[in-house]
Image (cartoon, rainbow, N blue to C red):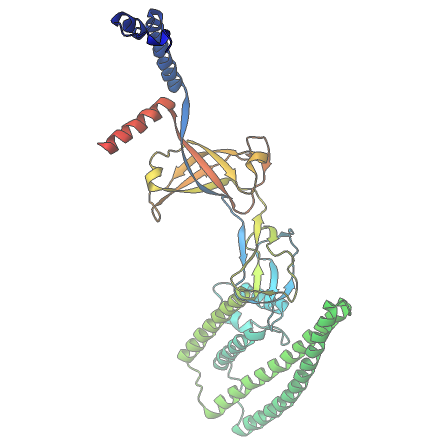
Length: 432
């Protein structure tokens, strides 16, 4: 064992020297620690850290785009407007497959509108359409209206007053013979329509395969429409003759009496029949036609919507964007527990999903107002934007349909030290 290893440092003097720090360390070390605490506290006081509420936002306009939704499933018959084309309110955009002619239904609608909201008996008696209109399922309601017209005329005119029963019977036989002849013509045209429709289906198939010109298909469709008009004209003639027969039989049997009460009942029935016809036209348009609800630009969702395309019911096929730019608004749903500190005028940072934040930046907005009544536990907060949507990177964004994104509402700029104290206090309360 070496001699220096035998040395034992155990004296109290040595221990005191080793355990006592230098004086300068005691003096300046305490001062240094105090300065660090002061600097950290001052930085924590000066540094503000925003208190925020984040939620999903839907950005739209005060007059948002109007959706175009199919009422029922069906095959497209006509597409009257192209994508991104300007349209006016009420203009027909798409017609679905049906047995009526759109032009004839619109003619009927125009005639109904011309009558007005409070038609007189004379106005309703003068109401009529060409006999060859192709109205499909609407024709039954139109013929019922004509029948009510005939009933009222019977009371007002009674054209058979001076005719004998023999003369009436002879007139009745003549009309019945004419009806039989009309029915034979109707059956002949019906067979022709069936034959041309088969030919049309073959030509449409060849046209889709680019083996036949579209002009040939169009001529065949016009031929079918012409035959249908002829058939409708014959059917209209038959219906009118049947009305004449009913009038003759009523006169022969003496059922109808020219009385004031009878005229009133006939006038009421005629007015009710007209109202029913009006409602049926509206229902037909709702089922088979998609029209533009406003003036604007039509934008179809489908990549290419074309004739003979099959579309499911209840499907949104596009929108009409208003021509005049409206004020842009945003709507945020915030849980009630977080909505208490939201106030009008607070700053909002909006990041849109369809515009990359790294490339476009965010949009600054403000809280306009918030609802007072919760819906499903959420408060609706309305966000207001400037007239032009310009991002923090100076890029302009055009509003479109409904834009989704994230909204950060800055409710308060709290100091960093306040947040530390809040957390400490919260922890103490939890432990206590």
